Image 1 (cartoon, rainbow, N blue to C red):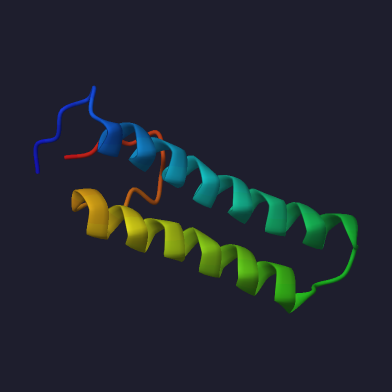
Image 2: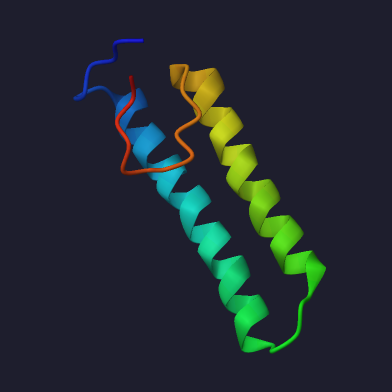
Length: 72
């Protein structure tokens, strides 16, 4: 799908992709700091990462699970 890089949807897709990646990193950070394997932060962070990916898929046609990858 070809999308204009100056459009609002492209910029919103970038923000959502980075929010998803940051939530994933935050979940791993909370698990690391607590020194135990807590399933709840990991499940919530992976779920939010996939949720933001799903929103991106519905909006621009690409999951954008890695925010530094361009929309194809």
